[in-house]
Image (cartoon, rainbow, N blue to C red; front, side, top):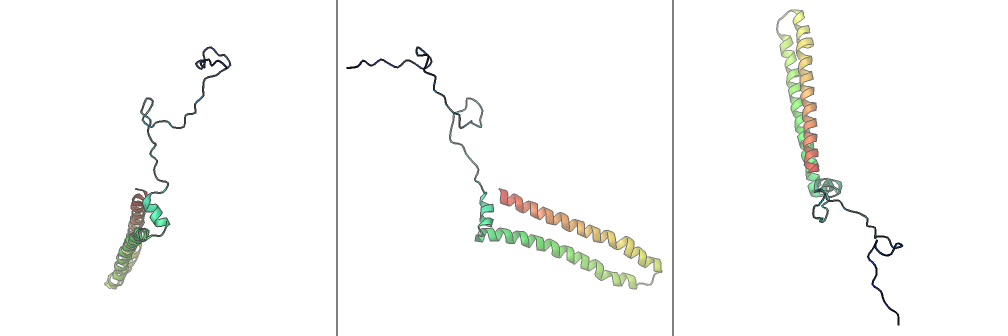
Length: 137
């Protein structure tokens, strides 16, 4: 028969035995001293993005809504431009000096065309930003 001796506590009595090492694999987001719990991770892909990537009916609806809003902005800008260009023959047909034609074309038309283009670009960017916000949620 052999005698069994109780094992000495780590770090005491037995100089060859070292204390057990532990590897920390989780740090609480609530700071030191917080009760450890399961880590909550965000999904790798938000649901709307995965719907679009997988080309489901819902994803198709998301993309179609973006396309519809972009088309609405484009048709609005095109309508404003058509009104401007369509009214030019009427304005230029009025009896007026020749300088009037240059003033209407050079000073009146170009700023309005620039304003329409500027509005359209800002509207298209806002539509895309709203869509990205919808997809990222």
